[in-house]
Each structure stands twice: as C-alpha cells, then as structure tokens.
Length: 356
Image (cartoon, rainbow, N blue to C red):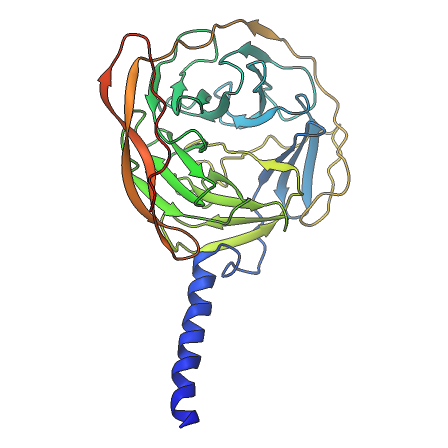
C-alpha cells in the first residue's frame, strides 16, 4: 500500500517544483551567462557601468548622487548615450557620448517627486523625455528636448507603480507601462493615451527592479528584472506569463538598471560608442571591480528653463483586471484607469487596487 500511494505524491511534488521554477525568474533561468551589453548606475557615487560584454566594463562619472539614470539617442545619431534626471529639482542633463564630462544639453521639467523615462514617442529615431507623476498616476510625454507643453498627457496605473517604457509591439514607437511592486506584476500599453493595459503578467519577486530592452534585436522590447541581492539580471524572451527566461550576472546592491529603448537596436538598445584611446576598460566577468578612467571632451551646455506641465483636468476612474502573482495566487488588482468625465480644475487620484 505504501508503494501504491508514493508515486502520486512524487508526481505532485515534481509538478510543484516545476511550477515554482516557471513562476519565479531565476528558478528556471539558463545558467549560462548572457554576454549582452547592460548599463547600471550607482546613485551613491553617480558612476555608470556600461558592460559591452562579459569581459569589458566601461565606467564613467556623470550626474549627481541621487539622480535617476536615463539612456537614449539624444542627438539622433543611432547611438544611446547617458543622461540623468534629478527628481528633487526637475533637472534633466544629457551627454552625446558615453564619457565623463559636463552636460551637452540641460534643462528643467516636472515638479519634485516626478519620475523620468526615455523613449522614442513618435518614431522619428530620436529619444526624448516623459514624466510620470505618481500623485496623479499621469504621464506627460514630450517629443522635444526643450521647454514646451507636453505633447501627450494621460492617466495610467496607480500612485505606487513604477513607470517603464519600450516598444512592446514592434511598431517603431515606444509605449509606456508600469511595474507594480506589491504584486510583482507588469502592465504595458502600446498607445500614449488613457486606457486599459494591452498586456499584463506577473514577473519577478518583491525587491526586483524591472526594466526593458530589445534583447534579441527583433525590434520588440521585453522585460528584464535586476535582483540586487543576487547581482543577477533575469531577461525574458517575450512579454507574457511563463515566457522563457535567461540570466546574466551583473550589478551590485544599490545599483539601478537603465530602462531605454531605440527601436531595432540590440540588447536593451544599448549600442554604445566604443571607448576611445584615452579610456581604460576593466576586464572582469560579471560585476566590475576596477574603475575606468576617461578623459572628457569639452562640452557645450545648453540650459533651458521650463515650467512644470500644467495639470490635466481629466478625472480618471479605475478599471479592474485579474492577474496571477508569482505565488500562483490569483489576485484582483486595479490595473489602469480610464477617462470618464472632466472638471475645470481638480484632478482625482485613482483609487487603490481593489481587494481580491
């Protein structure tokens, strides 16, 4: 009788282990490190670590401690370069090459507490800035790196969400999304407008930092999760539940991966300028241990002052959707918001996620 009942128990145990491996990135990831370029920013020291491959890490200094890192093609030359945003002052600073130095362009946008992200919002091959205002759950999108009113503004997500951006459908234009840490879930929208998520799925575990990139050069950005406690990046092959995952060791606790996208560019759209002859590149596998010395070229700084975007008068209401958390528990959450009415001066804050 013991033998008759032991086999079903082994089968159930095996199935549970397999399901856990599929649900949590890292449990089923390939043990072979990925050799793709990845960028990390150390907010404590304002140092950038640009990994060209597993044996080459290019380290430069740009920005101030506490800045938010940005990567984009600011001068439309087909190469992604470094930038930073100061969430306390609204200062946005950009360089047109990946070296230490003064900003090539600098201006101010947003209000204290805003988050910034980079993207090609109109498909012209140039990256610009969008602002996410958590207090309103609203995005303000600009198609130019200069002072002017937002080209698009719309509601999406809830105040505790973290904004992300990328070309999720391969149409050459970036969309926005949010990562919800409370449920470790991703919500992606292909259009720059208020509405429901076009794609939603659980990814990662609590404490992960989610960002996106075109990891296989197919023109579509997919999610990745940086797990600081392990120093590993888990890269998804597609934007859906239980998509294949591969891993690459890189980064330290306190570092931040950079969410950037240039349509059609390989691997997180981080096609860097090769280091010049004045740059020494470290050659450690995985996490860099030496600092790259870089001679900065003279830079022309353009400073433009911009008033914060005006507040929209659209009042959102919540839309409820269902997704599956990494623990396999089905949870009902407030995914996005939709426009239902307008007022002259007041913006309503979207309600918190609905109880399951």
